[in-house]
Image (cartoon, rainbow, N blue to C red; front, side, top):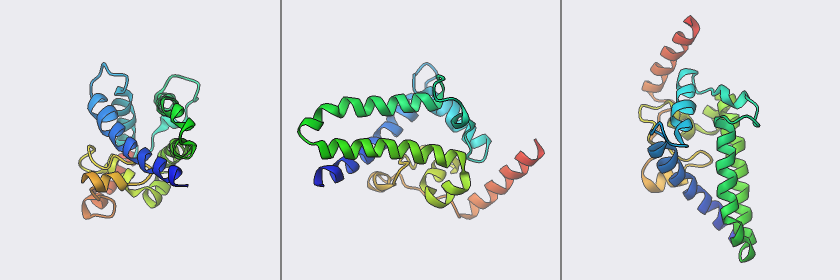
Length: 171
């Protein structure tokens, strides 16, 4: 049980580090493999009031969704040898990877669900500074690292949301 909990904790830290350094710092470089995150995923979420239509595409195509799955699978596979010593740790890590994909996809297909269940992730995409709130599954390491910035429910968010919805209604 301790190994599983340690795997969850480690996965949350890994999620924060990968999101900040790979998906954002490297992702802002157009020549990077990770550029899909900033150039496609963030762009679509901002344009569509948090909805990312790439999650409606076929997983077997090479698109942002399949790249995300490949990255998650790779991260899990490189940790697989640790399972010999700590199967609970690896189980926690694998659970976290599957949960990450599930809630990330669900949140971008159902923005109302995201606002209610993953407000920190909504804040990440829709807030003024998209280089904050790096955790998707649970904001533990955003609090630890000082990157948890609330946006949902603020006066600014209400104004921005109304403006975006008016813009979407006219297009």
